[in-house]
Figure (tube, helix red, strand yellow):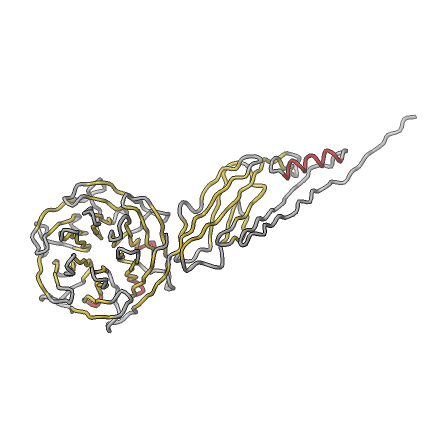
Length: 434
């Protein structure tokens, strides 16, 4: 007589403790999801499988097949001021975890292959360098690391509201900082120029609707030279007017047309270090260069999408070395020498980092950087003078650090940024924190 011994063992589930580091703001979270397949006749088999899975290798699944998995460690590094103290949220492969400003969190049992890592919850004045979301490659039994570098702008102040009184605005489309630190605003809907201190205290204003000297019809682009003289491009009267820093009329030039020195929609204006006045004409698809007295020096540009061509140039700015930067409706920025020789370009249509959606004004006043009012993305983007994306900030809204169709941006030499927030009828002031 033979006897049969049946051995039945219950599945053994590994208990892996959650490890928490004691360093402030640094939390490591371990999420264990183990499905051990059919019960094995030997407990040792179960223990071995569990131990291998806990190391991030093969996780047995419900059908008995091994799932190839690895881990992702996500780190945040936040710099700047006016920080978003609530922290952020990280999403990896549909798993969400809270994370602090300068912290790490680890996601376990992520299937082998590409996984998307996304960071959300940043304040409007904070921006992530590089791609967000981004893809990482998961290897079996390994931990891949990725870091989100977040830079936050300091919101210094804001001033203005809809109206026609001193310090109020109606869709301001142009802004520039003078050599003495005064801020000049082309108050487009009110057909005037207003001058403020750097802190936003109203100083004076000049202009009204009309065609005479010192009168305006939709002033847009505005610039200043090294002597403090103010130049205003007004689209309705197809001309440029020149004033003293106090608003005293000095000269004007231009008329409607396609000839030399004429304008059809002279929208952008920038003044170079040698006093040359550059005017971008959206409808003519060109840039014209004038002396400070209005004498035509030269021009360049034709309709098109190639190098040196324009879909509709909106803004123009000149850096300290004399390079000219033009914001084009074709969602790119082009860089030229002072005589119009094409140098390079950057940008594409979209809302990702470095991409553009109807860029308007731009500023090259801070050495080494270009700021662009990315109007229909409701943000400001910062690039190097070679077109490399650095940072961005802003989103649609009325809160501090948010925008409603920003039309123009101006910078001083010390990193203070002034934004003409046209749809919100105000000026917002920021300080860049590297």
